[in-house]
Image: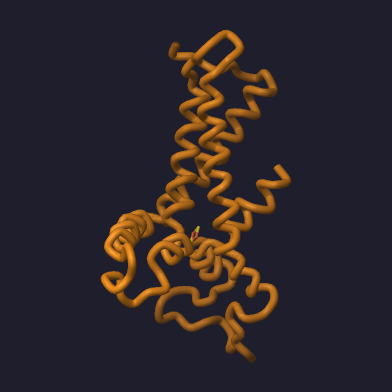
Length: 178
Ligand code: FES
């Protein structure tokens, strides 16, 4: 829980999509397009000063979030193997859906898109430029749906955590398909 708090939470808090939502909803910064802000600013520093300069950690928290996708995928695979053999239960499906949605959320990130396709003005002038352009286009497809993945993965994480907690507390037992 402690690691989750540091890494995936910092990834979500600094996410460009969530920033857009909470800057508008809570700071009225701005409330909406063409709607002026509630009070005139003395000095606008954007994300250049503390605390909002910490938003720039997003690209670094991406690396940690990518590791968590591997951990969640591994958890899903491990959940198939039990002391009495190989079984598929509801728990594996819940963990699997969560791993996929977290993966889609992570790899549709703007920082990942920039990492794979940014920093160049000419793909055809680069070594492997065509391949890079192809990867960038695939990531762009995911990136256009980033807000969906942000919400869906938020709910799937809560559902997976609740399901595992109920199982481990003995409140429910996992239904097995085979
Ligand atoms: Fe949302 Fe990076 S922009 S996770």
